[in-house]
Length: 319
Image (cartoon, rainbow, N blue to C red):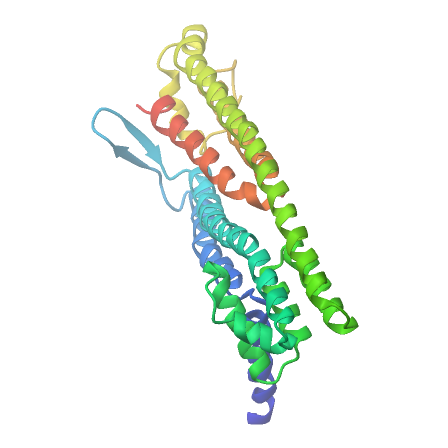
């Protein structure tokens, strides 16, 4: 039995070691931390759907609203996962951006050290004593790996995998090729530093220009929700009967369009589902505008969906 357990323990330790080495351990922990409460709310949604638990009427003084429908719990699961993961990605991208900004300085210092007659290994060890902001711990980690016997190539490749940006992957590949080929490495490092700085400048200009589109998306969502608010509070109740908006508070526990004609609660429920889907899609699109990838839109999805849910739950459907 003990012999059978040893490979499993070794495998677990190997997985953790690989995650730590690749810089993915924090991401893995965040996945677990976000998934556990999200799964709990999914089960609560199922229990609410099966009538095991009943919705609560929450009183806020001037208004009150119903919480605890299957849709409420399902959205809570989405909010928790997108909120935790979105905040983590926001902090990670901000850190990576700062690393990208300081990396050309590190490459420039390597070039100056090489011109002073240092070997490539000594140049890295010397640079590890410098101040490069958030990049400093990564350079010190590279220096430690080299001092423990790792080659310069493997230490730099491990660094590139941890940070994993196009700029650093490209520059590290260039540095490794330059160190292997020999010749005037200092000139190659100078060129790599200038190239990295120019790429970072172009990315900063693109990001600044895209902020306008990010603002437009948020304004568009605000206008959309304002129109929905006016329709649900004024036009729809007057057309389909007063007082029906309050019935929409239980939108997650009732069907839509059952029985006779269309009711105000049915229309408001449809608007709610449409607004949630709209907020989800607009959040992802905003991430593409901002950073060029969908993952960056997770935080915007969380913000937009939460605003939409609060507006409908308290303002439109509030009693």
